Image (tube, rainbow, N blue to C red; front, side, top):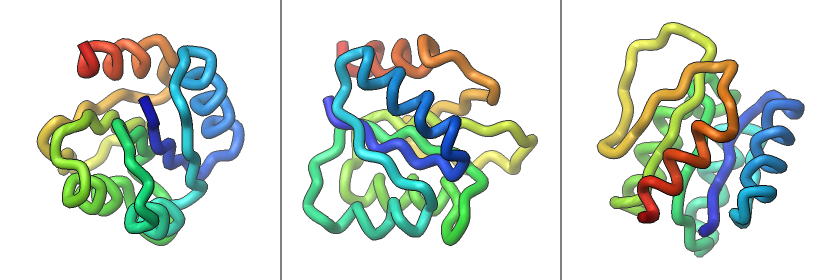
Length: 113
């Protein structure tokens, strides 16, 4: 299963990437919403998106909508440490920061089952 992780905080991104790789996932990472949007048309097949909401260049809502255009079914866990006006795409799941990777992995495993 291939997951795109979009997180601008390098430490949080590294923890997420390492946790997902340790759980057996292949991970592609992006440090901004803009970088994630540039990856989507690159022909990379993705099985899930894990995105922060507040991101440089494009927020997580924009990234998720663009992701949904290419991949209509897989899960979209959003992670946030802020009270936001929620705009999740269908299949979107809000996970509050700080979060445990076991929660994210559980969401992905439930979807894949």
